[in-house]
Image (tube, rainbow, N blue to C red; front, side, top):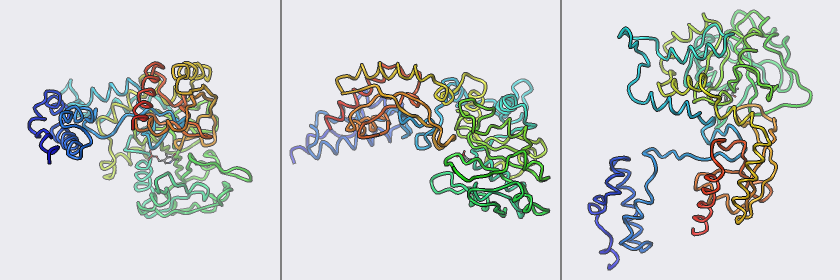
Length: 431
Ligand SMILES: *Cc1c(COP(=O)(O)O)cnc(C)c1O
């Protein structure tokens, strides 16, 4: 076939300086795959043979990993499908600095082994002085598994029927806890559980009472639940899974539990996620009584749940550095968001863009039902797909695509944002 002869050979293409440079940066296999795909497009007649190198260059990914950065314009501040909390610039910087060899478990002054992640643990302890000790594991689920394994294996975890929650993607807290060999002792009903229900169930076989914050749903109406303070009077350990990782109360979210309050109310151990409202990397935080934390830390399972140096770096910088983006988004003044929406809409007038009021949410990561006043740019619904393909994820509402500015990065300047929307829209039209 004529066209077949016009497809350049692989070695000739790989000698193209742009592809040779990309092979150094991304690795040969990624570049070869891009070249092979472009050759295939030429063979099928989709593109002319002389443009194969250009097509291969254009299709190269920006990074050697397939995860693509996206702009979260959904209005859901903590979007689990989009990686939950975005890291602050300080945290990204710290991750990069720790990416090579680093003194994660080494004392440069003495040349001896040192406590792993000591700087991060100190930062967490300082951020929550009510905790006698702290520990960090892979995520909140891991924190709960460790607590259940150490404190309740072959014993009972007393838990309200209203708090037997599914955390997402089919994973259910009760099953997770039962997988450790702990037995669940359910008390109360879906809508009402009182301190007396717990009191009747606790006894010599109790490992601990678990209080789980319903972070992704809300029960309204005829409801009752026992407080941490009431549970602390039962004479057995109380573990409070607060979920979202607020270390202290936040006035914007008056109903969201926080570690300091739970500990002050008598919780023996608090577990939380690092990548929800705390705004850090995926991690599980354990805060509480030092004897319990020490037992958890020393258990063999702790080694299987430990976090890497990148997580330790990001968490410490999130705790010590400037306010992370998740908190900034939560606290952003709606007037500022409106101004941004108006500027962005103005830049996009030729695309039928309008600045509109919107309602943002915290997301599966906490504060269900809380409505955060926000502002958005409204575009025709047909923009949703091309923008999404270009990594700009909004939400479709009443036949329009909304780009919500409360969840979008505050440091993304409007001109750049508009340019990205325009270029995605143009690419979409040509599709
Ligand atoms: C999010 C959440 C979990 C799961 O946390 P991961 O860090 O994703 O493992 C568990 N419990 C509650 C209450 C949560 O909100």
